[in-house]
Length: 333
Ligand code: TYM
Image (cartoon, rainbow, N blue to C red; front, side):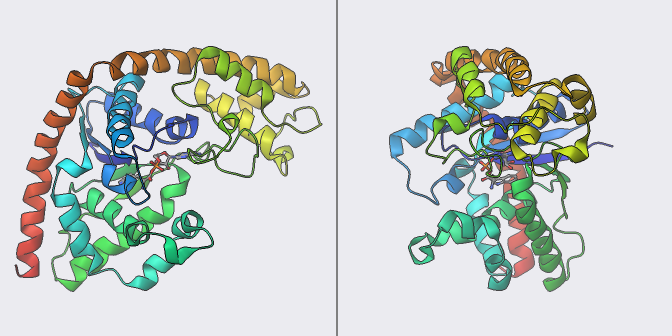
């Protein structure tokens, strides 16, 4: 069955292995299936929910675009664009904000994590950010949304909002209710320094993550320094319970090689972390270094990246512009 795919990544710098294995690698597979229509968005409106330096933001928009292409998304097959170029996203977000009850937003755990202790100081944008995400998805009638595990709750909210809009305005199936595409395994890559914390761009320690622009030596060094425990590696999945670092490193290895965790456990069961680490450093650097080299090459070709984004925005505008027009008519504008 052909799928309409929509997903987004924030251009906030330091794209890492979690973004790659949790999301971008799946974008590439979906892009490669000729049956799918894919739209990948650099969500710059989401990025400004926290303060950004304006020059840095411009660079990061290009770098995220370069990362998509360097990872294997083909701009002649998939639409790649940045969100702020298509007005309908912000307009749709406002309309949906007027539909969504505050109680639904109050349940969002990511806002609580990101706002931290001082919620009063967080921007209103950060609070309503999941509604902008719903607008992104619903404007394109997306059938499937590939994301990492941390976005699951936002997708459930998107589904609830679509149902409510269709019901409130008596327009059955006008907003398509999308399905999340979250890989069963390896959809949550953890920090290399703490197996209980998600790998994240905002972690102050660069050793906690593999950046997609890291060199081979940096990757080897980070894997060498990754946290472990003091036991040898198990050969069965249930023995990974309460061993988050072992589970994470074995999971990363499996995901990069596209093999099951069982197969990896078979390979390393009874061995030491040092054996796993040397193999992992090798498979990771052979997977990530070519992407990193390509990002660095593409980032110098600003004209090309800007052209990809401009062409993508034209195509996106055609789809989203039509949908927002219908949406406004339904509301009574
Ligand atoms: P963002 O920019 O934080 O992350 C981009 C993608 O990377 C995934 N991800 C991870 N996956 C596994 N392990 C990790 N440690 C990890 N860290 C990040 C995220 O799940 C995500 O898929 N709100 C979204 C962007 C967005 C969006 C959308 C996504 C805006 N509009 C519409 C889908 C559809 C975000 O902030 O992702």
